[in-house]
Length: 348
Image (tube, rainbow, N blue to C red; front, side, top):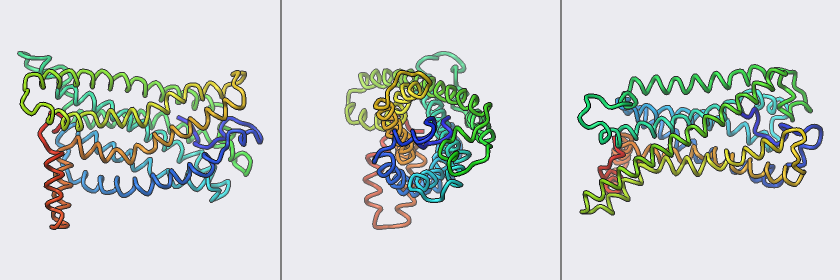
C-alpha cells in the first residue's frame, strides 16, 4: 500500500516539482472534494438504510462491510484535499503520510476483496445448483451462509489491517517542513522494506480478485444465456434487467480499479533506481497514476448503485422509506420498483 498520495514519495530535493502539474495541484483536489461531497450523503444514506436490513444472507453481510469500507475511505478525502491545497502546513502532511493515506489504501483493498467474495457468492447461488444436481450438498455452499460470510469479511479486514498497521507504526521519524514533503523520509529502514512488501502483496490481491471475478461472471453469463434460450418469452427484456443487477459490480470494478493497477506497474518501475525512464516519462506516468487513482476513489460514489441493483432488501427498504417520507413520491417509487425489482437470478 502506498504510504502517501502526494507526488513527492520518491523524488528527493526539489525534483518532486518535476511531476507536478496544474492537474495534480489544482484540478485533482477539487475532484476529490466533489467526490467527497457526492459520496458522503450517498453512503451515509446507504448506511442508514442498510443497517436496518437484517444480515440474514451472505450478500447483505458483504455489502454492509463494503459500506463501512467506503465510509472509511471517504473520511480520508478531506485530508488529501487540505494537503494538496496547502492547508494545515507540514504537520497535516505528516499526519497524512502516517495515517490517512494508509487508511485510504487499506479501505480500498478491503472493498476489492469484498467484491471478490460477492462474485463467488453469486457464482454459488446461480451456477452452483446446476453443477451439483443429485448431490446432497453443493461445494462452496458455505459461501452463502451468513455466519461464514461474517468470518470471511472479518478475515479480509484482519488481513488488510495486518498489512496496513505496520506502515503507520513504522512511519515514526521526526517530521519537519522538508521531510513531511517526502513520506518515505519519515519511514525507518524496516518501514521502507515493509512498504514495498505490502505494496506487492496488495497488488497481488487485486490481480487474484480480478481472476476470481472473471471466472465467476463468465460462468454466470453462460448460465444466464442458457436460461434465456430455454425461456424465449420476454427473454430480451428480462435479460437486460437481470444483467443490470448482476453485472453492475463487474462494471464498477473494471472502471474504477483496473486502470489504476495497470498504470501502477510501469509507474512503480519508473521510480526504481536506474530505471531508464526519463523525466518526461516519469511526468506522464505520474499523471496517469494520479488520474486512475482518482477513479479508484470515485468507487465510493458508485457502490450505492451496486447496493440498489444487487440487493432486493436494500432496494425495497429504500423505496418504502421514500414513499413513507413523501407520499407524493409514491408513484415515482412504483415506477422505479417496476424497473428495478423484476425478479432475476441476481436478487436475494
